[in-house]
Amino acid sequence: MSKKKEAQKKQPEVNIGTIGHVDHGKTTLVQGLTGIWASRHSEELKRGITIRLGYADMVINKCPKCEPPNTFTTKNICAKCNSKTEFVRSISFVDAPGHEALMATMLSGAAIMDGAILVIAADESCPQPQTREHLAAAEVCGIKNIIIVQNKIDIVDKKRALKSYKEIRAFIKDTIAEKAPIIPISAQREINLDILLTAIQEKIPTPKRDPTKPPIMHIIRSFDINKPGTLIEELEGGVLGGTIAQGKFSVGEEIEICPGIRGEKEGKQTYNSLITQIVSLHSGETNLDEATCGGLVGVGTLLDPSYSKADGLSGNIAGKTGSLPPIMSELTLETHVLERAVGTKEQAKVKSINMNEILLLHIGSAVNVGKVISTKPTSVKVKLTRPICAIVGSRVSISRKISARWRLIGYGIIIS
Image (cartoon, rainbow, N blue to C red; front, top):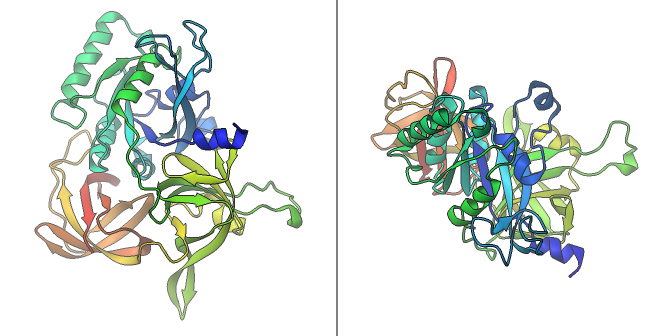
């Protein structure tokens, strides 16, 4: 099999998020599994925390001879019996920031997650504020397949490890994670990662997707890959990073990006879609001829890189020209409000959404601010500060400002 066909076969087919409180070891876990440090932005390296969404791919292989829990590995040769392993599937990890000020970034990532690993450090009491907030966000975003990792067991004694386990069990009672497995690990020392791989295979299956539908890609990152001083004739077009929700894309196809870029017409703000051509497709460091729905992909285009630099196109949707959902500047949402706001120590009770209230909305990978212009007992109508491209029936997370911070208060379903 050619290298390109092998890469096509091994394209990631599922997105798994690593979520949880800041400094509990999410990025270290991703590195232990993939060998990639997901926080690659210079400011992240300097401060030691994840700021933007991190990403890394992993291959799961199976040893044909070993019995569980030694069946699955990320290596080509089994460490237990030296047998050659067999490819099972590839996974993309979305590493979400744990700091409370970066909750909006976490919610953008949650919109594309098929499952999540909730990382909880054994050396701190549970729940920490963002442990609670991230689990609530997973519930709001409809993520049902969850694994809990009890990290840092190498730096606590047996008594604390057991107490931490009991705290976690009490915390997840009556939540979507109540039946989730709790796996004690050390991400730093790579202890019990084989057990985690087995849990991933059992608890986070690849969702059924329809490759025959018109392709839709949620853009979560965008880049200008040209270095300063590059000659004009050597400049490369903008690169899009994201996940294909349905359908498939091929090199050479024309695509449209909506709602596009901001402009002005007759003194009014407008948005204009961008039309370009796919010149390359990437899965990790390997080029593809075709990218199917599932994990994270990179799409090279002919776009002016000034549009794509510094995540300038994140939150947009890409698809075949003329096939994308309508662009909306107002949304009617069927609302589902949480009993209490999450992320705050006081756990404030959530009041009804009011007329003229300003809300922060996450629609797919897009972040938008809207003003409530109409309310009913079970729905609200919101006027957006900028238009979005969205599908009726999509889930939208809703946050309001509480004590000068955006706090998650529930979700809505787009009904018109």
